[in-house]
Length: 510
Ligand code: BLA
Image (cartoon, rainbow, N blue to C red; front, side):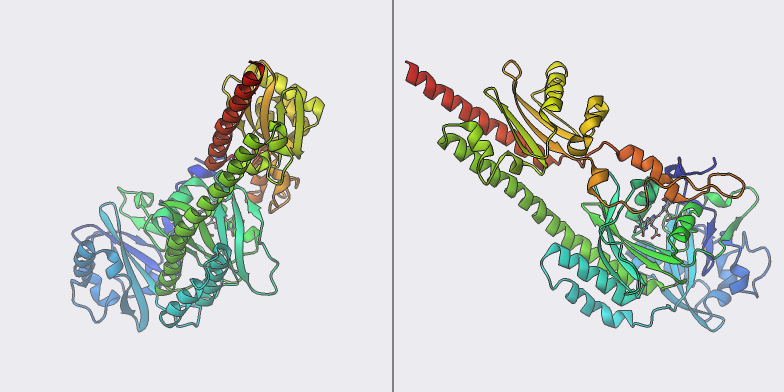
């Protein structure tokens, strides 16, 4: 299968058949027999015997662990299997007089032995700075400050040119919500990127393996070799540190002018909430210990986020609830329900985060905020009346189901309609604008597709922006569960108030 911009979520990035060449890899089976190794092993270990495949790992022990007993690898594996490999990783070893880290992980029936230099391009003593960084990071209770502190502390610990906190929205696209960077770089804070920039299978991988280092976009990968009756691509590198990078993503980083990247997963209730994405404009390697320190910051941030995110959701719920409570009191107190819902500080609009709303009651039409005009509303109501059976209907793509809405998608790509009475033409409607207009997208959606010297479409991930703009045009941001619940509450309060009034009128007439 050829991977291009249209099918990149199908690229099997966990089995690339190669690794990044700043380290080397050996895979062994349960008996210690070498089943795979990277081609570049010779450049680290020139004294290796030929035909490594099929030999027992113990036979090369003096080369990979000068001061270790012959069976040290199998001992490490036995210990790691019982106690977790995080207890043995990294194992400090000496290769031809240089300090190396050995990192062991499992891959099906194989164990991956990955050897990486035990030195970083950052000069900070990570072990000493990490404790302090974490206390500084947690010093503030406010969510945005927590994020800013985290970005700053990650940069403090690993020293990349730019560190961003990138948060995924429900539809998978993302926004840079915090940033710490060198002064000479332009800010990307507030920029939004399409969901396809980080395809689905990559997200799945980042949920399992919480850090990802890409050392040098210009470095040639090293192929994984195996016996003739097997294929290198059968070795699953999900847990690997050295996994080679998707060529499309390499191109993407080059397009951004980035030479090296590092990202740390942020999880919220086991789902990928976002990434701390770090960029360097020159190649950069940080060793396993520095990556683990950065991962720890990510994990602490994740659990702090979990707590604050729950608090934030709670606050949103309470904001809607207090609006509905006030509206409910006003409806029972005022003579006019229209007046109660539209004429005070708190209105219908506050029951959700919509930017416009319309109330049609007892023959009156009242508009709040940004709404379609009367003519457009008339058309919309006619369509709702003829097509919507449910008393509550909502969509983020109104023009998709009701094409005339294309004319007013700026204000009403998203709509939530609550039908009070179809016979009496009584409705409450909330509107959300088209999100392409409301958020700052990185890249230029109107930029023509790049064509190379041979007239082919170039493999530039930015090209995908076109497709992406099509999928989000005439679409609003989602209606949250909290918004739906809030409207349902308002509906029962309104029904109650209408009933009370009807009862009072009946009493007057009797
Ligand atoms: C991976 N894409 C990534 C990663 C990031 C981004 C952070 C994780 C790896 C890394 O840290 O470099 C995207 N990086 C961003 C974004 C910003 C950033 C949005 O700094 C914003 C500031 N990418 C595309 C398209 C495809 C694609 C169209 O744009 C597919 C056709 C693929 N992105 C892609 C793949 C990976 C990836 C395959 C996984 C790379 C890997 O781990 O091997």
